[in-house]
Length: 168
Length: 234
Image 1 (cartoon, chains in turn green, yellow):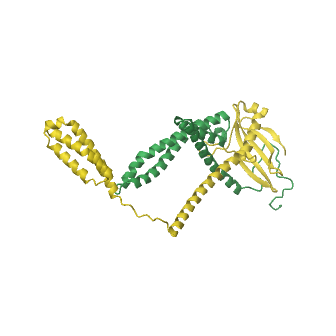
Image 2: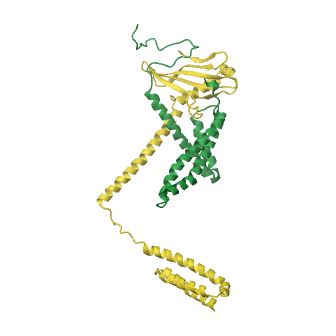
Image 3: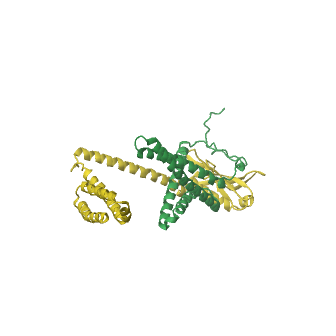
């Protein structure tokens, strides 16, 4: 039951921050390992790539964590303001996060970063939505299997509906 | 004195340095000059060396200059120009065109994927048959209903099904077909200051392909069971 589930919102910020940090560390680790391997001279390739990972991966993780934490904060704030949870919140909070993080570079840069953030979040939402659609297109039952709420008098499918099962 | 000798030599050598660099001669001469200057300075007695700080500075500058010039000249001399084909052969042209075409295809594919994703988001927001639009309209109606406001209390917030890391954006919905007519059942949650509830609704597609509300009601969670019927067209 939903009653026993706590509100995700304030706690979600911490969760998103940590998840983003982990993602940045892993992705940055892989990338800088490869880059360090390529940029090191023969004979010290592994040590070079390890030092590149040590230097770069936590930095990228930190950047991701800042982004994720701010994004989640704005998302929660928008949910509280609009009293509604929907994909608009996430797109808008992506744009706001981009704008805030680029604010020190001036208004122009800030607007550009806001558009970029909004588009990125819209694409991410689009991935979720199109996966949902593909799944629900594949599974569209011909007989209603969703139960009517018990409190109202049951009214089944239309009277002309033929049961696929043979009469007993 | 040795000091004057060094200074004179430096003054003497500097214009020739510039000449060298201009003329693009070999750096051997510069290196030779530098070596001589170094030898002269090292020959100086201690006191004279202390006196000739100015000269030292100059010398170091010149040395640096020499090294720079030397390296640049060396580079210029050592880099051998690769013979470039003045005209591409037919085969090379075909290969290049194939590469360009592949890159073009990759770029266009990326644009197509991004466009498709953005389109799916846009249609989710702006199409009147999409689950998000249905959810928004239903939530508006629930908020406007005085019985619901009285039962739930305060500002009513709505959210969908919880999935993964605190995301509750999408309402649970299912399209189904009865006798060739498409229906959609949807369920989402509302929460007021007093109580929370579950909204159940059903839509039927009419002849023009637009969804029409069949029923919409709010089941209150917990406490005495109660269902508030907002609309029932069955």
